[in-house]
Image (cartoon, rainbow, N blue to C red; front, side, top):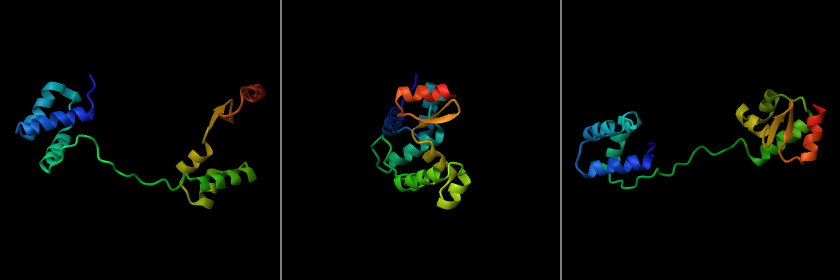
Length: 136
């Protein structure tokens, strides 16, 4: 049985409101759920959050690192570079633009997949796909 994190948090909150210690809560979780119980550290953290006055069980919004490499301008520049020289390598693109290999890989493989050792866009019509497939 898979229980969501929100449900576990609600159970931890219930134990907190019943004035159980975090250790007692941990023991109850291990008795009831075994290996599926949340980690001890998680229970300690949630007890601390509830002591600080938090009453919401959902995760707080956190902003991640903004995407700075895979943006429209870089996609356009990489496409132009590839159209000019189809034998351009990842390292050459990286040296000229200063973006990481993962971003270059993402840009080069946007909406394409490998079919018979050729990269074919997904948005080709079936007739063109068959013609390209027959040429393999």
